[in-house]
Length: 404
Image (cartoon, rainbow, N blue to C red; front, side, top):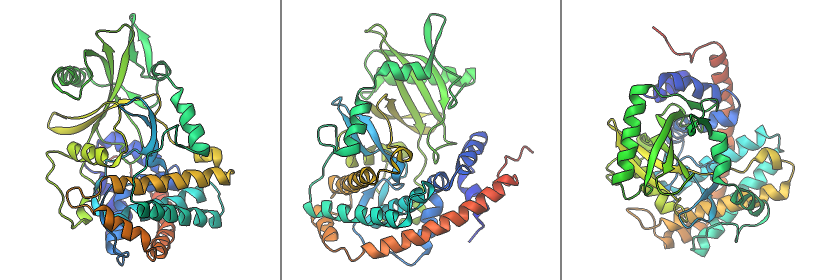
């Protein structure tokens, strides 16, 4: 197998070169961010390892970890807590999703200086509640009305946030109008020719797409950074203004959709999507409980993009704040397990995925739990080793952009 350096460079070679430098900077911050930015390494290594116990074929988000659960406002205007990142989504063994998630628990909890025994307890609890939810055979959603404990408090707090608060953080007054702020650390100016093309494209999408917001026009657009694994893809943030309602605005994220990093390692036949963006959105719509408020796809300059409203309610559980509250962490992990199983039940029977009876049977037989835990525990150690090697190379300049 190629060196760690060569594998990372090869995977990121088609991304925007200068933005990839920011991705490497993020990955060097801590081992959990490194894990988030190297999903491709995880599945490459998994494909070369002795196979995990057989599991049903399901729709998976592909990159399940502690920070890929969060809140969002749905099209019914309620706030939900659910899986929220489907860039890597694909049809694959259910066990792949689980081992990716369990590994993230071991890595994140060590970064938070939570005892290893507690991390193992949480990993075991995740698998227990995942299986128990499958056995019930019924998908469940979590909103402020049904949430418990810290998740309830979390959703209640984010539900109170308003669009004006988000606009205040992301925009500035400019010539009696609003404009997207370039002072924000994750927002960058777009060159004028590209800016003109983007504005024209978005205005056309709004006027012609059934997914677009009604009677809005583009005021501004910038380049946006977000996440870790997706840093380096083309991503833009649009500020839209209503033509009907005074002082009403929308922020819309337009993100380039890349092939799933799991694709090279999956032998299961996949549907024929018209684009990578269609894959991402279609699987999201199958797995999530209720759809986000605004969502769509588009093609711009030959590339496929997903479109989604940026909301004041989007947020993730900050484990740093609750790392000393064992009961709160327990509730969050319990809910994440329930949501993972529910997403697979909800999308069951679609284009080759296991039907609910198969998922129930998988949940009833828990003999596979130990193999998942053992692999995840072992692989967490490999990630820490890879991270140390990456940081050493990063400090020596091995990942710097070759300007020649």
